[in-house]
Amino acid sequence: MTRRSMLLLLGVGLARPNRAATTPEEEALRRKEKLILHSPRPLDLETPPEMLDSWITPNSRFFVRSHFYIPQVEAGKWELSIEGLVQKPVKLNLEQIRRMPQFERVITMECAGNGRSYFEPRVAGIQWRKGAVGTARWKGVRLKDVLAQAVLKPEAKHISFDGADTGLVTAPDFVRSVPVAKCLHPDTLLATHMNGVPLPLEHGFPLRLITPGWEGAACVKWLAKMTAAPDEADGFFMKTAYRYPTRPVKPGEAVDAKDMAAITSLAVKSLITRASGPVEGVAWAGEADITRVEVSLDGRKTWQEAKLGSDKAPFAWRRFRLDAKPSGAVFARATDSQGRTQPTTPAWNPSGYLHNTPDSAPRPEALKLATALPPGEGLSIAREKCLPCHDHTIIVGQRLDPGRWTREVEKMMRWGSPVSEKEKDVLARYLAENFK
Ligand SMILES: Nc1nc2c(c(=O)[nH]1)N[C@H]1C(S)=C(S)[C@@H](COP(=O)(O)O)O[C@H]1N2
Ligand SMILES: [Mo]
Image (cartoon, rainbow, N blue to C red; front, top):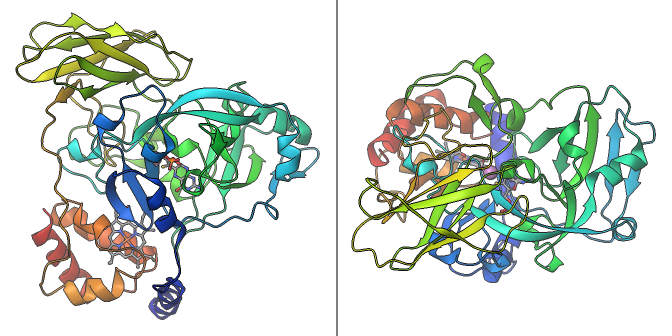
């Protein structure tokens, strides 16, 4: 197994582009303004909240979340296939999709991991601050119109969506499923355009799923295959990742798989984008509507109602504003049409999803990213067995206790890092000493 991993890993190393070639990630970075870089490849970029100062987030500012490398899709050869529990399996090309009725919707998308870096104890994963969220004008076809061509069988209860990206070495493929009821919602789209232009490669060219109001992971990019099935999809990205406890959990507590369920709709949240006066921000609530945003200028003793912006759409955030000249900390909290309001303490959970609490400015200090792996006994192992798939950036952003570092190294071993048992201990100790 280790030998096989080593050979496969060598393959990844060789497939790495030489200096002359540009990767899709490098091209994507050129299209972006200066965002927070969590990882250059796989590409993970976050928008600093002060750049989220418009109702529509320009593509150059929109956050990027990718588990694996960006696949290069040739538009002319690309096909979407619809199979599984359907009466007529279909394949559609881009031209056929362009000829179908087109719809445009303004929809906010947020990564379930947004805010992860504020959880205590810290958990592994991209250490997002507050800006893994954005709002775009998505254009494309209704998913239900596409499904109507294939005719779902009555036993079909979930559709699984697979993009053209693949897991690296032995890492699992990114496949997500969505219940049929959500797939048939008239605002659930297969989008070809984002803010008036064809989807940029990093955002899923040529076609992506948009599940309005749901966490970003349900918006599968580079869509290539849909499979109708009786159950939720199997696989790491449905059965292990993106699950949330169904019962209250104490910070740091382990949670049984049977007490976890797939995340669907987003929570009610607010984000301050300007605190110097006037106070401005955005607030969203997944499938619900924002009804109120309040701002506190006295450390949450009293709250004043902010004015909501006139731009609105069913699954899009609302801007808010309070004409005031704050002299100290500013807080914002949102309430939605389901009567939900932001909780005062964030609900810790094992993978650090759906972080939520009234937003504050200035924010608690976010993690500083180290610039390199420091010297130490584990450095040569890390160089040889960790850096072929991604650089140090994704590693040095983590702050984990020794147990969590060991589990992280074990995860990477399952994903194809050929670390031996002895090296595992050395490496986990090295990482835990430097990144705690
Ligand atoms: N095929 C594929 N689709 C994907 C992902 C991915 O890694 N592969 N990441 C998901 C996650 S976790 C999020 S939050 C959104 C991010 O979309 P964006 O990069 O356009 O902002 O895409 C989702 N779709
Ligand atoms: Mo995400």
